[in-house]
Image 1: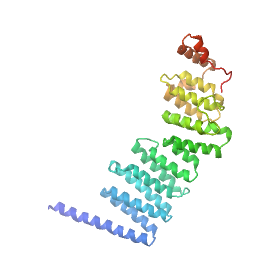
Image 2: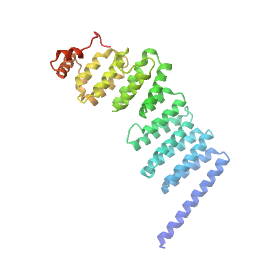
Image 3: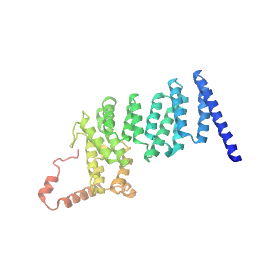
Image 4: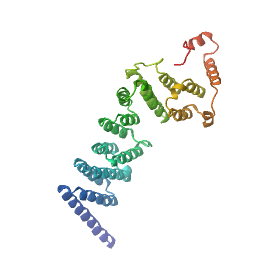
Length: 332
């Protein structure tokens, strides 16, 4: 053994003895219910384990510690240890293989923190951000959102549950919560607004498949709608139906999109936020340029162009044109 090796071994032995002493103090602190001191011991061990690269051992230690804190109603300390778990997962990177298991564990800890504890929001934010690195998504991993949705649903926070279910891509669960919110917490004349907000958001997130699934389930199962195709009594639902149809076409036409927006402008004006969503949708799916969307259009010119496109599709067959026309004088 060289002199360098002789120096390394005592150093390692000293570090091991140091960790062992802290673990001993930690055990005593927990047994005596001195949770403040125990919390400090966990933080000390965090830095020592990280310096040694012992991520897996550290994760297990912090998880058990967080459970102990939260089960003893030490919510701030438990939340802090949960944050250390997330930091450890970020440091460990690919060294941790069971990321989904840790999403489940972190959500378990979050569920034990009371909603009014300020630190919980930070834990949720950091957990979603970390999970997004796994799925390469800026909005977080679908599983993390699904786990969060279940937590806030149990807490009767239906608005947040709807938000997380939507981002989890669990269409049926999301729609189920949305219908519940609409019936028990919304006005009857807002039934269409609930699904419109969600469909437009999903389209902005470049997820037309989920948007279509949610819309189809909502109009089918909502007792105040209970239809699968137009005409709907609520004009905004007709707009959403035709918009999704237009996006599903292989030859998407910007003029169709603009015409729909103008035809249903009174309904779209009910919520000012729709304008920003529609601008993004126009750009993402119909190739709209910003200057085209902002310069304004003459409705008559757009309508003429729209029907010219229809004429081109049907050809000069008058029967086809007649069958393709609407029998209603007004747009519903």
